[in-house]
Image (cartoon, rainbow, N blue to C red):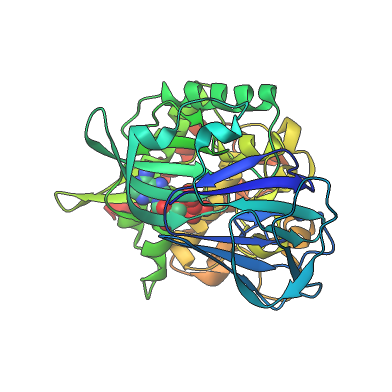
Length: 403
Ligand SMILES: Nc1ncnc2c1ncn2[C@@H]1O[C@H](COP(=O)(O)OP(=O)(O)O)[C@@H](O)[C@H]1O
Ligand SMILES: [Mg+2]
């Protein structure tokens, strides 16, 4: 079964999207929706859900939206469409669906890809990869476990659907950045393959599949802060990967515990950083403003003040700030700010973090000072490079760990 959604009006007018297998497609203003229309006030946060059920059912359900979900039966050209509101419904091929300003036409019987010549690349990435299952979901898209058909190796396939239809030069610029990152090789970095943009309208980046867990989920399982010995092992490797990135003039820009993957090898934890260089690039090209949406902001204390105010001109200092947050998290199992109902962006810009030794008195004074120095609001107040930070931090940790 193949479902084709052809957008007749609204921000994505002129685009066609095709789907091959069972799928749930949510439409709403929320960044978490499959099709996200944050600028259409007539659309509710999660407005409706399209469910594609092979062999021939397309089921649409309104999710309690404020302004309703409408459909109009297949019409001959130029005939005026008459839309009716509905709660849930099986659509027929050729029907129109209206949500806010967007109208799509739904085709699923006897359609051939050739009927909808797309101006984008003509190959389908899904021929190159066999999707084996979903691993998880993040701010810019999903990660699937997939098999690279040419090498028969497993990869983690990062797939992102752009919120707006990208222009040719934006696609080029994003893929150039992915290519640059795919040329990097370091034991503490997830290896990227070259990415692409496929006619279905997705960006995808095949990455080395890491069988392990993220530092985020590891920390959630702990009942007390990590020991200095364990922290030292993790910190040393994060700094190693980061030093190499900066040496190659790549700023990570999304260094958070969900992007620090841990693999156990011979009883030792090995660290692999992921998502370097690309997530913010994706955002800056205007494909997504997701990491700054109100929902995801709650957990965004790793963003530096300048990352919020001047996203164009950030330097390596943003990563030094984020590392400070990461180390703070490991040694306290807490965020850097007091818990209150102030918005995270306000805290980041104007609130001082809680001194780390108030949260964990066992942290040696000098070590605490170095961590708090990374969290300075002014980039100039932080350690000036990863190399400098590494020297300070590892000297200090060596001393206390050996005691
Ligand atoms: N290369 C990888 N190998 C294995 N799992 C991965 C890989 N990259 C990401 N993941 C997992 O997929 C999930 C979603 O990742 P992602 O989309 O980057 O979201 P985020 O980093 O915002 O949490 C995460 O839980 C992460 O642990
Ligand atoms: Mg990630």
